[in-house]
Each structure stands twice: as C-alpha cells, then as structure tokens.
Amino acid sequence: MRKLITTLSALTAVLLCAQIFAQDIPETITVTSSVFDHHGMVPEENSAYGANTSIDLSWSDLPAGTVQLAMICDDPKVVEIGMMPEPFVHWVVYNIPASSAGLPAGMPADADVSLAGLEGTINGLNGTRRAGYFGPRPPANGQLHAYHFRVYALDSDLGLETGLNKAQLLEAIDGHVLATGMLMGHYERKE
Image (cartoon, rainbow, N blue to C red; front, side, top):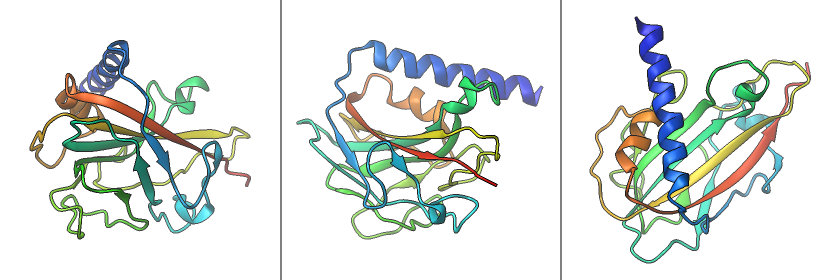
C-alpha cells in the first residue's frame, strides 16, 4: 500500500509539473550559485559523499507581483537511465519571502528556517523523507547526473504548512506561478 501511495504521489508531481509548464509560464528568473556555473560541476563538499553542505543560491529578474518564492532541486537523470520511475528530490524550500535575494550556503536542515531575511521559510521533504538539503549521491556507474535547482516566483503568500514534499508543493502552487528559472549542476561519482 505504501508503495502505491508513493507511486501515486510521484505521478501527481509529474502531472502537475507538466501542467505548470503547459501554461506557458516564462522562464525569466536568473538563478546562480557561487560554487558552480550553469552546467558546471557540483563540488564534492556539497555532495552526500562530502560534507552534504547545501549550496548557496541567488536569483534576480523576478517578475512584478512576486510575493513569495519556492525552490525544488531534483535529479531527472535517474529516470532517463532507468534507476527510478521519477526524478529524485534533493531539496524543497518554500514560503521564501520575495525580498530575499537567495539562500545561503550551509542552510540548516530544520523544517522551520530561522535565518535573518528568510523568516517563515520552510525546508520541505526531500527524497529521503527528511527536511532540508540532501546532496548528490549517485552510484559510481559512469553516469553524469544533472541537478536542477528550479526557482518559482509566486503571486501570493500561500502560508503553506511544514512537511510538504515536491508533489504537494507543486499542487499547492499550481495557478500561482508567475515565472521560473533554473540553475543546473552536474555530479558524477568516480569510485
């Protein structure tokens, strides 16, 4: 039964993501990090093989009317190579104030983020069903994995509660996304 619920939740996330992008939502937000460029390599320190330290993220070019932000990081490569039926979720963050210019490196994994400028921000559930960041940890199988850090600009304060996973967050923000932007990093385990 638990596997069926997980599968249905994954299917819901895929359908909602497709629905969000079918709405012609502009991809105009610029997303960057100080530790790698777009299509660059995620450092070992930020992997689950290293210190598992969350990367810093910065964004700009938010559309007018942005009230709140959300961010999802996942690895779609696991679907392409047949490892998993859905992208593995590495980080879910929501209720981010629009006044924030980004997320700091080494963000605490607590569900309720208590950092200056990020009041009310919540770390959602990653693919391990825990709050906070879970860095890249692919097997040493000769595959270069891709990590999509996607930011969503939202038109209202949704006041979302703690404990949401990717599928639940996508369902909650459906109809509220003004624009998105993405930073993609790569990681490959060599050993």
